[in-house]
Structure formats: C-alpha cells, structure tokens
Image (cartoon, rainbow, N blue to C red; front, top):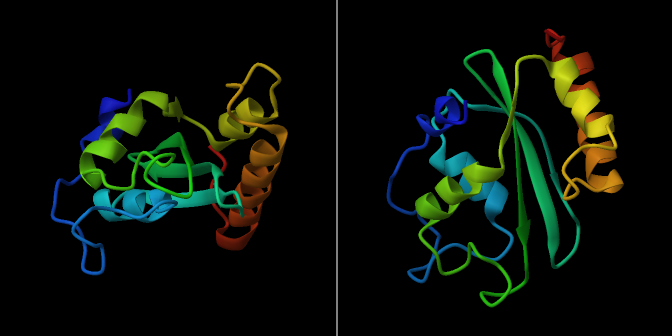
Length: 143
C-alpha cells in the first residue's frame, strides 16, 4: 500500500540553498531524498541527462520496494516542482508509485510490455541496469 511509503514523508522547511521561491527545475530526486525519512533507501535512480525529461527511483523500506517516477522541465512553466512547496509536490507524486514485494518483481515489471507507458525502454533499461549493479555491489537479497 502506498500509505506504507507516505508515512515516511517528513514535512519540513526547505533546506539551505533553496531560494525563497522554491525548488529548482530538475530537482525532483534531491527533493525526494530531502523529504523522506532516512529509513527510506534509494536502491537505484535515473534522471534523463537533458533540460527536460523523466526521472525515476526505486525506494526500499519495510521490506517493500516502491517504484517512483516524475518528469521535469527547465523552467517554472514546464517543471511542476519549481516554485512549489517541495513537500506537497513530492506527496502529490505518490499517486504514480508502484509497490512490489520482491526485487525480481520490479525487474519483471520494467521488462514487461504491459508496464506504465511512462516508463520508456530507455528509462526501464537504465533502471534495470542500476538495480542489477546494486545487487552485485552490496549483495542485496533479491527477495
């Protein structure tokens, strides 16, 4: 249940260095890290290397995996996070989160043609590669 993840969101002031008008365009992964409790681990993340695009992260907490995604732009007119309350923005992105009990299920989902159309082949392949690399690096259990 997504509520299992949302309970780890922490509503707090913007961090130092974030201007008064809000977060910056393309700061979604930084905001995600900032507003989640440290118990939530980011296993893998992907952000298109462009002025606009998609970003995704695989989160792990309470023996569950959560696949999060969002998009970003280069200015406040095309990036929803810029000039917004970061906490509320991240909370709103939780509606697109997918929950999994096993890491294999995440990889299967990203490999499936039935996955959400917003996970392009590029995004899916990059996330799968990073997940597999993390498994090798830290010896992560694939359950």
